Length: 181
Image (cartoon, rainbow, N blue to C red; front, side, top):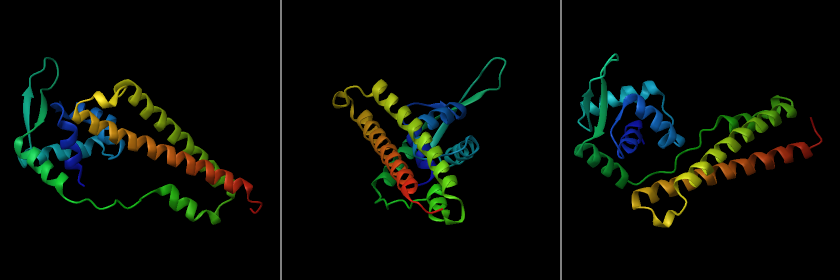
């Protein structure tokens, strides 16, 4: 997957300026595909050059004009082709797992502290995801199909955080029960 796919997915609902897209991105596909504002702006230029998005210049008083981007039919077709391609399972790239794997070089209490820090971060994310579910997905069976896709994506995010929390808690307990180091 490329950032272009994530940006096109975020723009499907409605046209946005680059700034608004950055904010929207953080609250939607940004939960599972991170991109900086600089990366988003750079990719918007490429997508516009390729004809996948089009920009409308909106005049503003007292501020620079802004570009509002929307997906073109060519962009939707590009996204369709990509969606229909078989996906491979993404490799895990997680800094914490590498740290834990090599933790024999630090005191055990230091890695436990790092695990507790990650546990708190995963608790915060889980709380945020559940708040989104309560606010926007009260009765998911009644939603239009596009919203059902967003709902099941959110459900995977919730499951991911629940499993990370369980792993953090199990690992902390396991390490505390160990009498060495």
